[in-house]
Image 1 (cartoon, one colour):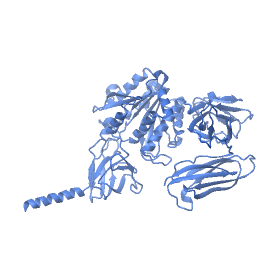
Image 2 (tube, helix red, strand yellow):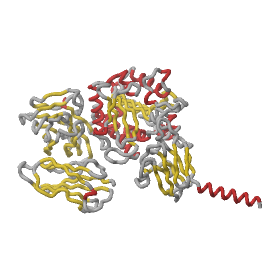
Image 3 (cartoon, helix red, strand yellow):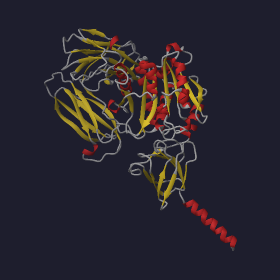
Image 4 (cartoon, helix red, strand yellow):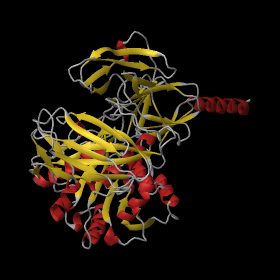
Length: 623
């Protein structure tokens, strides 16, 4: 009887264990300090805190078909992530995570991993390194060891058949703060594009030698820290100390950089981070703490990043006085403006255009970051190149400015003029181009007196169009002027006239190959006297702005214009405009919640019709 009773107790105890939710974090990058509950439904979790208690990453067992509510008491998480297999991660919905630090859900599997954002543990870096072992464009080194004797792995990425003397040098380091895992996926996107078979990427490997230290703090990553290393030191603030007082990880990085810089200039140095704020940013250092010239160049660098993506814009930039203990401060103290040294921050949540980040978007962001660096270094490829004002034909008495008081222009100068003789112009002519569809972009300096209707003309051998640009806004960013079909061995000519209602600024033109021509494209071009521009932001959530330009042959005569929104099936959603208008620039705000029907997330089309011709853009609505 006693044996049966003992067995029964053991069986009941086993059932009780199976019914309890079990929390575990004894794995690479795991972080969990304590768990308490009074009802086995609502759990209070605390993380192991260092400077902050932000990072958490743990596993819950026995949760299948069970509603579990977790409050992470000492974090600041917004809509964290979960995964059933520790590979495919999903963000908790707004209903499942209705406020900071809280997530609650009924799970479909027996066990689930949860984390502040998708983890990027030490083993994942090792897997990444293994995947690159046989890549001919990668060299793998160890530049030293951490406080707990983990290797500081350095990647050198380049086409090793090309002499270093023909290359720009770049330095990048990441994961100073272990919790900032989005920065690793951003950096992975940069690396993956740089090593890809893309024609432009292949060309960049011939022009750039790139040193990457993916984890400067491998101990902190493995131990699940938020902002410190194994000795609870924030490595971000240790760069100006004497060698004997400097943590090993920082000292080894400094020694490697010094060895490179003793022989060659490092042109760009990026310090990869992530931030709690709902936007990406650069930390731009003030002119007072650096120099007027360097301040201007920092903004130009950031603007070129913004000009290649919808995920960051100038209003997202952050500004601070440069401190000597930061990596950028150490570089400035030793090499001044030779190194474009900046901190690049990705968010954990969403970008300022309201797109929530995921690893796919961060990878795309990484590719776009590389293209921004390409433009800053003034590297040109036949399918992606920039013509600055020094390569333009100047007709008339244009003024040249190299002032550091202005910063929204490309390179080292821009031209400007008040409206004058119509024979005055600045003209850029491309080399002969291969057949294809090309995007034509312009950049200009926005002054308080700039023209709101600067006039550009775009020509090929069988095409002409005229575009009007408001140069008072969005200076320093690429503005899509036109999309042009080019037949083989033809050129694109862009002319900026000295016409407008204010100062005209001439800076740079960018040409990007977009796609091959179709049979329809090969036909003679139709000249349009109107343009419909891509909505912004796109994708969008609550609202987006739609802009278009009308150019009537008689500027004082009104013409009928319609602007309508359609769904994916071709059904009309709403009419934004249906009336006669004069020539000019127009902008409409589309608010899905203001129309008379409920629309779901998805793809929608905006169609502009004018004089029996129409243009359509695609936009993405995310509820």
